[in-house]
Image (cartoon, rainbow, N blue to C red; front, side, top):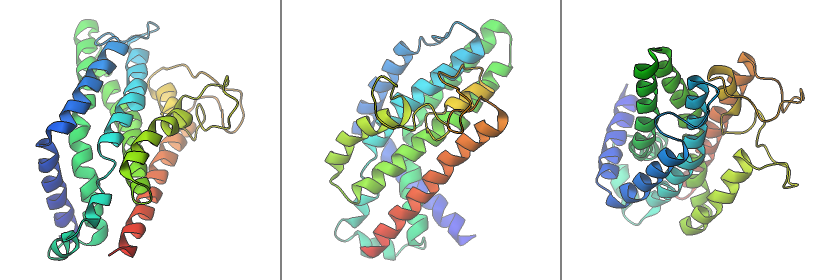
Length: 257
């Protein structure tokens, strides 16, 4: 119970600090506006159906919005190495792992608000204009299975990388890495996890639950036809990778305490 209380307190404290950071909003709000323009808000850019429009918007938010959040929050774990903070943290009831988790989750939850509002508002608008309440549910599904997992994964990876490299370098490298992992096309002859069940973009979740057509499905184990098991597998791989990356970051921090 004390661990949950410590985690909750850390999340609230870090979220409050993030809410007051003007730089965070100055970087994320213009990006959110760009997503709305590119995504054809509130109708969406996919004309095959409202459900698919929500799915396409969720994928767009995951690609652009997750990148912006990770760049903005890339130095949260590395910030715990600042002089004097180790003694300050030692006086708190939360353990090292709980504290690191709260340091990441608090700002990430705050930074995710604009993207969540865009997709939720789109679902609500389409529900009102079409009279189909399942579209609001679809927006929630997009947030929980596509946007949130991808965003959290990239944020955790950025923070772990910042424990090994300067945060400025990590921020520069995030764009080519995320492009490689999510939307790299066959025109560029490089091995990539993009358009496979290993990709954190959420293609298979969007295909299974939001009527989005996959760009590639040749029947191979990396490119299977969309289905419930493949959608769950893709989501599970993203979540498992996030947990593994966080564990690595926690161990790196523990070595320096």
